[in-house]
Image 1: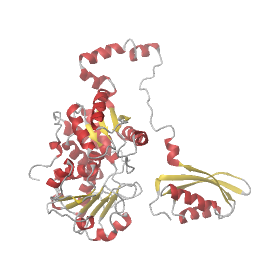
Image 2: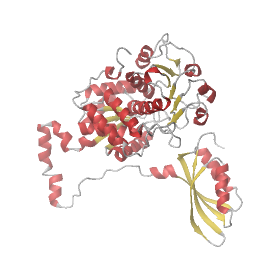
Image 3: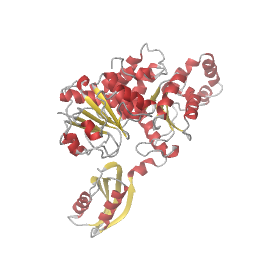
Image 4: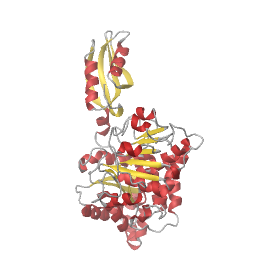
Length: 479
């Protein structure tokens, strides 16, 4: 039995030949279930008088677990395992995105207008008025998804080529949920100056820049410098997309338990890109108090030699200057938000939180605490997993955020846009429909992206180009 929860990310299809008798199918599904996997489909593809050929599809926990399931089927009397297919690798064969022309180019006349000689007129118009590029080129609807491969998912620094499947997936999500044309830009450098210069150089073709999977604290400097150099929005999804979705989920979670954000104490495990952005947005929304926790322990006044990001957190969080471990930090806390590592907490730790506790254990694929244990003590539990209730997924935010910014011709991304997007996501569910298992809408809810886009467009009205400085993301002085 696998320790990790099965998921579609490790889905396999096993083609088996089994003796044709009344119990054949039952023996197959029972075997898979006993091995700890979840059967999602069973299709009979052929048969004769003595045998059935079936494709058995199931979710497993990891590659080793998939091999265990296949071996268990192989050991069944009367069963022959003919082929095992990894459905995730099959989906990625040849990549996941392509370029498709918007015009047919069926005649010489169309060719003459789309390309030479007609295109020269459009080029000259843009040369005379560069702003026309937003109207007459792909710039009006195109985003660069930029990474250096230094912090890919939970895999770490695996480099640009290995990051490409993630960036392709991101581009596909942009198109599917926001109607935004996005393209992966994977850079074979992790030098901050070089990344900034490359992105600045390619920016004329794009209406926005989505930074992705760049390690902290470099990602903060890269984003801040690009915001000062470019006249298009720069959005780091690992920071701002995550923060927007967490605030949206927390808004509804607090509605369910009847608490006010100004009265709650929040503990955030993980003070990297995502955790820092979450805390800054919560502070801007007026949260009561936040304790930041990372590998050095709770960030408190008294720590020295901190990077600028952690120093900012020390100065703006942890009002009681707590300096202990994570278990102690969450004792009596109203909210736990994990964007860090698996299995840091137990059900007993969650039991020590305040009444009607809220737990967002977002480490993927394995959360900071087993959600089953957490539910025994917390009022509301959310994870980043699609196979658990209350999935907090960035796809709720970034397609609509960019849709709104592109439609508005926004010159930058602001904290007001982030707050508006979070409120829009929360409100899509509806106060009359939220409950402990439904605090965020489904990623497939067709209302989400348009609602977020409309909120961002409204927030972008009459907003001048934002400052390159980080003050836009800091809480009001009284915080």
